[in-house]
Image (cartoon, one colour):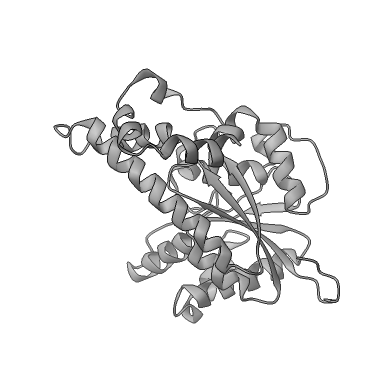
Length: 277
């Protein structure tokens, strides 16, 4: 959408829509290598974590900038205004206000909240320009990853059955996300995949930077350049693990994803369209 005719500068928001464990966090971190990007992680969950922390008497939370939230350059301002946050929408208004107060419109806010609903509210704010990044993971990798996680809690459950259910949910939820985009009339869209982010990292990150309207630059994969403010509830933010994309190929070493291909023959077609096109 063009800004012609709108003299008031608008804050650029990159909103990542994806299923869980589809690379949204690693994508956000690597987008924040650009000097004009700040990655806030899953804003909706961060607001809930902050509210819970206060309700529990100040359970300590840390930001990925290594500061307690009440000393973080960004989240400390949000913490002071938490009493204004009656619901998620008012919480998002506070986050946007604090971001504008700290950075103005010179930087782009990246939110990896995943679900479409908060993006709908953001699109209703006339001081924002929302660009959605739809990230999809290969159904085979997604199904195997889900099966292995659940096997730790249910070791006697056949993994092929869990993988089949995960494949169906992958199809249903990604189709729902795709349909929901038509309701976001003021947003722009870019589709990528976990596989592209991992195997074509520089080209894909640079393409998304262009989509976000940022000044062109070369991606180098330097974690020290990343500018992020994720709360400690995010596992990648607090684990110390590498934030450079590395492809998880464990699905190639098992056949537990095969039954879903026979039960849902549309899966390979959707996989090709969303992940490899």
